Image 1 (tube, rainbow, N blue to C red):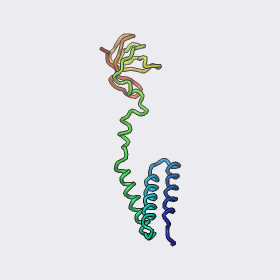
Image 2 (image 1 turned 30 degrees about the horizontal axis):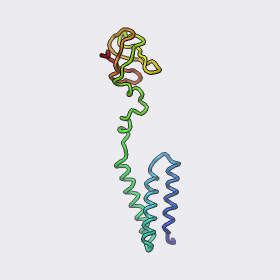
Image 3 (image 1 turned 180 degrees about the vertical axis):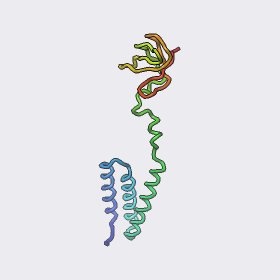
Image 4 (image 1 turned 90 degrees about the vertical axis):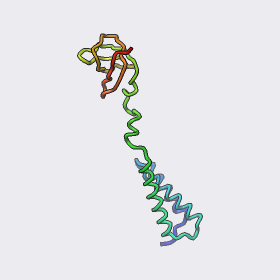
Length: 144
């Protein structure tokens, strides 16, 4: 095999970054960064053998991907932000009943829609405070 020139690593890095754009992951990003760093090392140390360059790339790739797995945000941390959980934003807010709560269930006007609510029996027009969300049902108590 002929010598690998530093710009070969940069081309590989660009190819991996393009793959990153096309694939639904962040795996190729770290391999591309490793290729760029290997290219910089090959540029700064012109007498570096291609076998050493491949080892440098492999080590950098393992370190970069390992660090990504170690420090990336976990799924639970992302779920705690309430993304796609519209009702979580209503906890602590006060709304008016548009249907009385009877046998534990009623309806309240929430912004531009009507939500099912669960709580103690209350008459029509009562003000309720949202204490929790259970699926598409808001858990409420009388507002004070």
